[in-house]
Length: 305
Image (tube, rainbow, N blue to C red; front, side):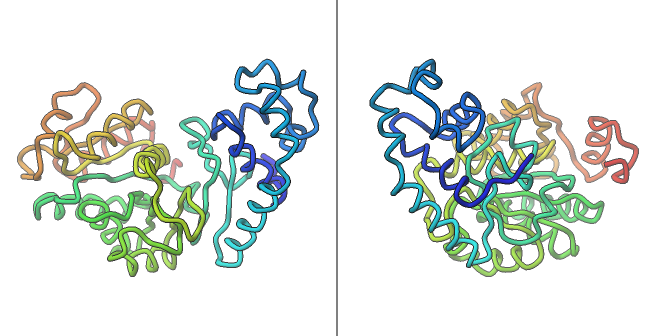
């Protein structure tokens, strides 16, 4: 996969300023035109088979210079803050995201090599009880000890517990942030974000100074589970974000682990629904998780990655 120049990255992002064009349609335009630059050089006849490219849209496409310049400036300012941008056409971009939902922007700060490491994602209620927190910490720490990178969203409750457990084991962890790198969300976790940048990796779909966007948490969840082959949901109500994360992970074909009732996690109403599903694996211990991961991956050890 060849890397784009900053100008080409800006040209790619500017496509989403066209009426009716989002991440997926921008990539379709690039595919049809056979290149980012070629989108801007193609005649209307090349793009007109796409139902969302009208003559008006094509005219707008020819007049995106100011948008391109704006995105280029933003990308360069991000780089000055130590934040790199990867698009689906850059070598840094994780292959597993390509096959899931392929967000157009992936901003990174920290150890980018973790994007090619074996990962396990975590999710769960921000109101998780001590039993759920302790269990998630034990599983995350154990997986980190085994060489897995722990992925989660940096939020209160299960997310933070998983990140901290990995760090305490001197393992690897990735925060998938709903906000830009310069505005950690939640604000109370600013020190956690700094530590993860120094010892792991923080990624985001937002420019460094941007707050979370409407719908950004659901978008974050899609990336959280897409990065890993498996996700552990340690506590969930039946109407919270963790249920949405579960549904997303199932659609992505991920292995979903949930704790057995004997663990005593709360809230549990969402977990009860998940346990009744054929799409989940109920586990009690780290050994249960590792056994299932190894079976699914056809591995006898992590060294087989």
